[in-house]
Amino acid sequence: MSEITPETVKHLAELARIALSDAEIGMLTTQLGAIVDSVAKVSEVATPDVPATSHPIPLTNVSRPDVPGVTLTAAEALAGAPESDGSRFVVSAILGEEQ
Amino acid sequence: MTDLTRLGAAELSSLLTAREVSSVEVTRAHLERIAAVDGAVHAYLHVSADALGTAAKIDSARLDGVALGPLAGVPIAIKDVLCTRDMPSTAGSRILEGWVPPYDATPVARLRAGGLVPLGKTNMDEFAMGSSTEHSAYGPTHNPWDLDRIPGGSGGGSAAAVAAFEAPLALGSDTGGSIRQPGAVTGTVGVKPTYGGVSRYGAIALASSLDQVGPVTRSVLDAGLLHDVIGGHDPRDSTSLTDTWPSFAAAAREGALADSLKGVRVGVVRELDSPGFQAGVSQRFHEALELLTAAGAEIVEVSAPHFEYAVAAYYVILPAEASSNLAKFDSVRFGLRVTPPGGGTVEQVMAATREAGFGAEVKRRVILGTYALSAGYYDAYYGSAQKVRTLIQRDFAAAFEQADVLVSPSAPTTAFRIGEKIDDPLAMYLNDVTTIPANLAGVPGMTLPMGLAPEDGLPTGFQLMAPAREDARLYRIGATLERLLVERHGAILDGAPALV
Figure 1 (cartoon, one colour):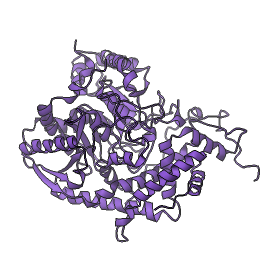
Figure 2: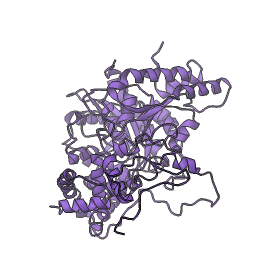
Figure 3: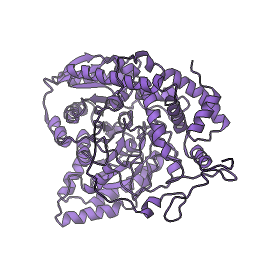
């Protein structure tokens, strides 16, 4: 059995920046436990002699000439932002009070 | 007058080129069809207000003698995962509600350059996570064959739009079967190209090493015509292959005319021909194999012993990549922002936004991916899954020594009922058991309808897979098989409910 506990889920949710409710934490603890137990079978055949594949058709040294191209204007880049001051994205305080 | 919505893209292309119909007429017919049936089907999230204007421009260009591509003037539906600068692009998520991107995805830009007429954006499981389109934040799409059933997923909207004659063509994206499984359960054709064959630029990423954009159509030839428009190298996608591709439409035309499959070795993957599949699916699959044999193909059984680990590897790799890709939805640059009561730091705003903006399946996979990538678990899960990927690639390589194409049912069952699997993620994940191996290995796959299952009268799909870069082989052999299947069963969508 997996070691997924409510505390694990809570910690993962903090890492993933999702403010889960207690009810969600409870449900995910059960569901993740079952999913993790199921996917753990990958380790059955993953012996040390087998190399890992990260990409189906690997390409190397993909580059392009370093020349200026057309880019988004500030107005275009900011058009979908929840809040901006016309030239920058506006966010809430980065540092908490304790910092 | 002919109902223009019943015609495929190749037929529309001929009529448009001969100026027997105008793009405005064709587009209007589809908009009327959408108005008539989409209340029941819910294939579209957004219908373009510009479609008739775009069509009129193509018509006048044609009258002016401008050289146009073969699909100019043909309407198309676009999966909402693809960025469109003139229509909202939400990927089925509340967190992107109303967001209009500042640029077009490359496949969309190529459609426009080819003169196709975007009709609108189609519904999908949120961020393409699902096999039923029930995980859309905007409500499920209904299968045109039975409105109480799912149209597959994640691209259920594109498949349902094409099956319900609300569009002759659609774009989909396939990460673990999101083009092919919806194709199977709606009686349509879908192709997942070789990884790198179609640009991913502007396709909102789910799992970058698996995602591939491709055609959703009612015939193999139409899929080839669309693939010819959207495919080919794009310097904006660093995984885009630089190959020169043959015409897939030409391959489909060649296949449709072939009177024999003599010399073609068709490999039946033992692990994907499971006794656990729905009886009618297996029956139609084995009947299709008999048609291939009768046409001269040699049927060989091949074994891919590591395919049984594919679903497990996929549900490690996909959540890991998705948890990274979805980090960009942070309430800063686009989409939703939710501030907790009384305000909060930027981190608290992010967490509140993601809690409010992501649905249950997205949260589940992001948390799972975060777990699989955490220190202490990385080797056991992600590292092992990547090794399984190597083993699956080796299985494919060995199988393609014995066979020119590999075949299986495209999905283990016909369309299930809406709500039937929504509370059981593991059961939902098993819908893609037949389609996932191709994504893990990057090889191309196609589904085409192989008749209705006798027990429920619903569509079943036949999957063909070819070695990487051999997409043309799928079109050639697929078009021959399509002709044999239509001779046997008729065009199965002719038997679908009228909906009005």
